[in-house]
Length: 255
Image 1 (tube, rainbow, N blue to C red):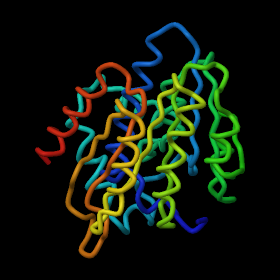
Image 2 (cartoon, one colour):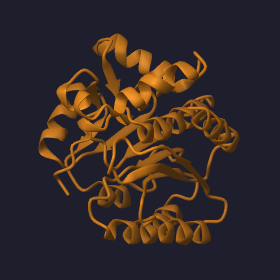
Image 3 (cartoon, rainbow, N blue to C red):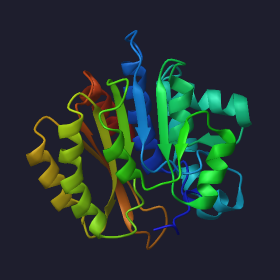
Image 4 (cartoon, helix red, strand yellow):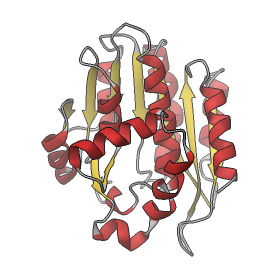
């Protein structure tokens, strides 16, 4: 589970889907003058160079963020966060979810980032101002809930290298929701050719009525590549998030 390297995939269409919804949700939550907690279970290194050999080898960023960003409104929270990252780290920098969150959150908000991979954790420690944990993110999530402040958002973004993760998450999310019934919990998952996500999604939408499930389909990044879509399940979706999801669906349909 420590072999996955996101540098090859940073800024791909799945990232755009996930990060657009994340940025929108954080922007919405920070409109209220009350502090919040942000928790991320699989943070990664947080910062990527889209001209690095890994990114150029796959071309996923060129088909993803490079293509989609100009189609978003200039004041969209995702574009605002990316501009902050580039101002801090250079024109070819791409912020992962930790830096997107840090760009949009305030000094009064708490940030908790878990990353188990040694090199990814070390890279994240060099750039992040959040509280870092070199530990299993899902175990950390269970131990932190409910957080202080109690308002907030958790992003769960595993690599899904092990097939059993789907069944494990189907059991875990309702437990997290029971511990933190006011928290916004976002779970990303890939849509693969074998549709192995379906049982997990069906279980979660039955166990947590009102959860928002948003899926996008797109062409594989290259011939033989197994991922042809991206999904996000949001527990306690903020008001208006369904409209944002519909806008994304339309945007992707026009690509």
